[in-house]
Length: 208
Image 1 (cartoon, helix red, strand yellow):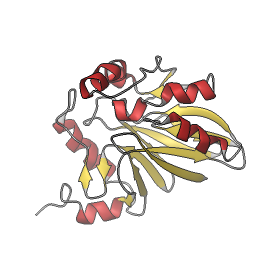
Image 2 (cartoon, helix red, strand yellow):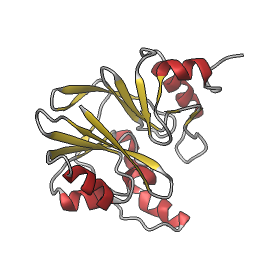
Image 3 (cartoon, helix red, strand yellow):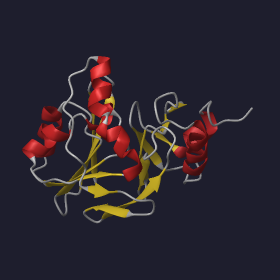
Image 4 (tube, one colour):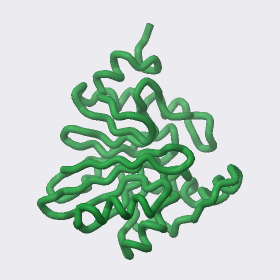
């Protein structure tokens, strides 16, 4: 599987493109902004876009959805239902920041804990990991996890935004770091890391 990262928008969000060259299937995770760049990256391999997966619905993760769907009509958007209030109010939040934003149409499919989603033959299990957002999920594969804004290299996601929950965040982090230490973590912001590196060095996870 080929994995491409595009850093997009004012919040420098990581949009991930997954491409299975055998089947030609592609998935976009968190198209947060700059849909023209995302679409150009999708066009390059010559495959077909089958889904948009959202780790959560903060404005910097959903702002490019409509632009992508204009280029790829009918591609379904997958979101955990607990994050629907965040999704529906993303445009208002963007206006508060004074940012241009296109409110996306309602999502097409609901993600659920334990659900298995695919890019060609590559399977990912949905983990519901709330805290940064009520419907925050991660997509856990055999050798990598797309973790959204839960765990970063040397840091963790914010818990001071509306609908955040610090207690839930702590529980989600404890669960995530039970994964194999060799598992690559592709986060919503910043460089990729591994579970083992963060368990050993992340100041939010290392206990004194």
